[in-house]
Image 1 (cartoon, rainbow, N blue to C red):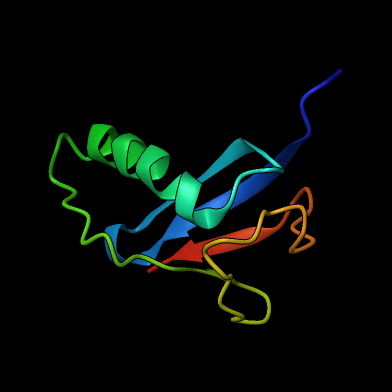
Image 2: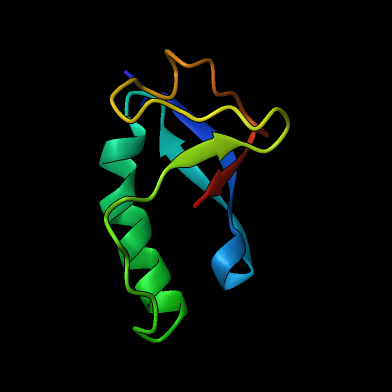
Length: 85
């Protein structure tokens, strides 16, 4: 059985960073945060210090994503653009 993955663009305005990533559709934003924190620390040479209060929203309509609902259940699809604040 193939893993359900979604190609998403993540943007972190506070760092002026934008990147694409394949993420499992079953994951929630809450589960994604530690992975993104680790990636961002690497991309910024450990300069990124997460607050732990980061949230995600869709760039196209500015809707906040619930932290505990899977990306697939929120109908996040390939090519969606998510902002992390």
